[in-house]
Image 1 (cartoon, rainbow, N blue to C red):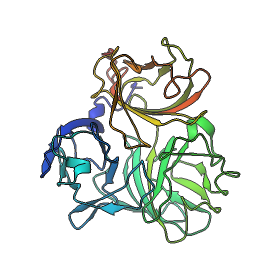
Image 2 (spheres, helix red, strand yellow):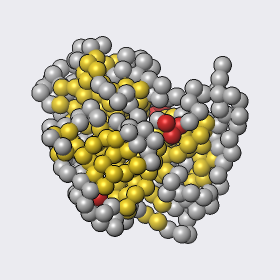
Image 3 (cartoon, one colour):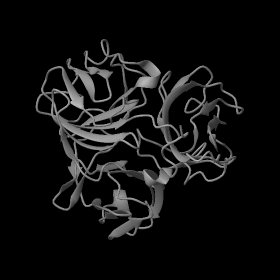
Image 4 (cartoon, rainbow, N blue to C red):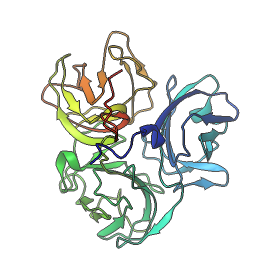
Length: 356
């Protein structure tokens, strides 16, 4: 059997950097028509902006959500279309401020949507089963329910946000704490919330290759009657994506984490103590030994850059921690991560890749 089914990771996930012009702008170089675009200003404190093809557009304006806030879905002149090699922007400063630098992370879904009736609640889904990624929209019923995700594989991580209510970004991560409904929130720094004692009994308590199951308690972030939600679902694909956990050692000769590929993008969160969701990518951190540019999903801060530190080495088969702080590698702290590949460790033809 081949090591991986995806030799060219950039056909499914890609990072692009661009500079705004304050007018209209076509951002190219993605390499595909994205279904999910997450963009953030690097040198300004504008919000994180998330657009997807399932929520789509209101008139010509993309419907946007913000990971650093609980705000409801908005429609603004930020992203105005998904294109064959990227996306188009209007004049909003959060997405296209003049002389402002930005990073955009892009995922490929199905470039179309279908109705999914696998669960007790019908959902609208754009699923890429090859890449293990789906975007799922559904409306809550106020009761326990199941929702079809379209992955054809069991998710390793699910992120859910209400679209028309000011609730947090609920995250479950199967590799770290299992099917108990305990979770994190992408919009804050807190550690793991207990479903029973902290979340009013609400949580995703099971998932399969076709659905995820929600227990509806007093928490309003998952299945409130009449509230609309968007869920981003991820399954592990060997050589392309990985979702796991590791324990920090507090040393510059830090913990090595095997992913099976050279990472292009990582999101890392300390689950032991309160700290931010770290966003690292290979386009902003080009050379090992100087990986010092990071953003945080939970806040709108500009990119943090410090020439005196190295955060992490991006290797041919994983990543190695080089920083000693709570954010990435505190001694004894447990971290979860999601990672997507620049290249697989070994191609389907048996050819290995090297570190940068």
